[in-house]
Length: 247
Image (cartoon, rainbow, N blue to C red; front, side):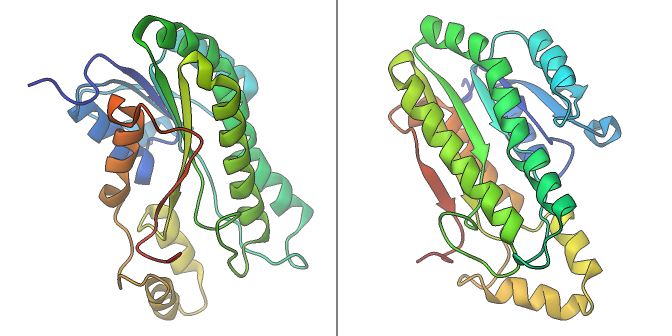
């Protein structure tokens, strides 16, 4: 039986680990022709059945080259992002600039580079889909010590809604994924860097009403759904998968 994404060409950024990698594998298992990209090409090893390419999403020239060579796309998952801690007073200019450089600027450049091909596929097949990685932190809910991060993730939702509004009549859907706290290498790095790692982990778990961290495989099925024709009437949404944090 054909998979839910059979015949679809999908590009994923930051696919070397965490959410990006899990989604690349799940999309491929559902029949998609996946191009998985990451700044660190070594992290892309072992992605069986998946085409890979090195891509630094902070480099617009590299984006133009890689996305241009990818061919027309049916789906795009902008997954790249970082978490920088800090309040308004403790966030440095470098922290602020880096957060925008990684969390929002690449989505603009990658999506703009991919849009001509997405539009061609939408015209040919009836639709194409963009999924942007946002967060429950930002315009959905405020979190302490996340000034730059929350601001950029709110911007992701704004960008997503703008794309959805501008292209809805041309067959393009755009939605933002807003996860709770996900157990990824990035999170493990932040826990390890805390003064008391054990307490830091307990604190992350405690803010999830379900009593555990999300696993990447709790989130990847939602991305598959949003990239598939099953969500063909869903656009412009900030889709929460947060274990009940925002109840």
